[in-house]
Length: 290
Image 1 (cartoon, helix red, strand yellow):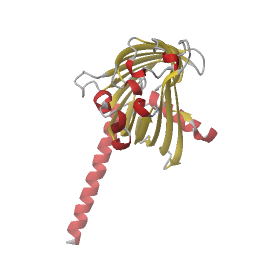
Image 2: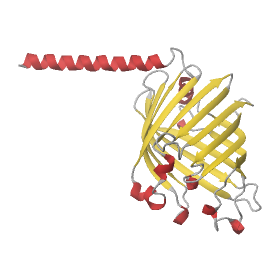
Image 3: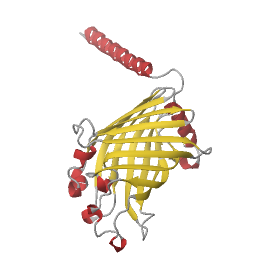
């Protein structure tokens, strides 16, 4: 009997190893044998995290001094702007995103904390003011299990911190799987809403209807130019409440690139999660998706 159990256990272990090897081989077959654009970025971040307390840029960090919105959400801001000014079409948009390792499980796996802030500044208004800001801290595990693959899983909170009727927030648990070739990168990021009673249920119960349950990001890099396309909530909403964002970063200086960003859909900012608009902006970027 013991011999039979041992044989079964050995067989199951062999099957497990075989399946794991098959999955790894399949993952490698989807990418390149050479270091990809994503792997190069991962290696640079690992090296940078060894200095200056391990702080690195995380999501794209940029400034768009000219950001034009075709259909501003006038009604939601009524009575909340200085001197009751109407929202202008042209504004300044910027984003800052940083990450720091909290604990390193191994050379390729770490627990990380990130913070991303996006804001819209009515710079061209009669009395300048910040129309909207969003704050997104995340705690997640980041793993580079094999070359050219990155898997991140964790929790994120995002809110505009305004309080009252203008408060918008949501909490999510997410998994982000990225794979890459010599010039391209594909990222698939599904999520689910969590702790809704303390966030999304308060002022924006239907945020998942407009922002969905995930996003797909594709990027291509050639001659130091990076092109990206982000799709969110297109299929799951039956193409009624989807979002498309396209970007292009191009060489200017060693550490600064030109940046063009075009947006069409819902959720341009958190307070406008249920408002459809088209926007385009131009400026500079410090780090792109690859």
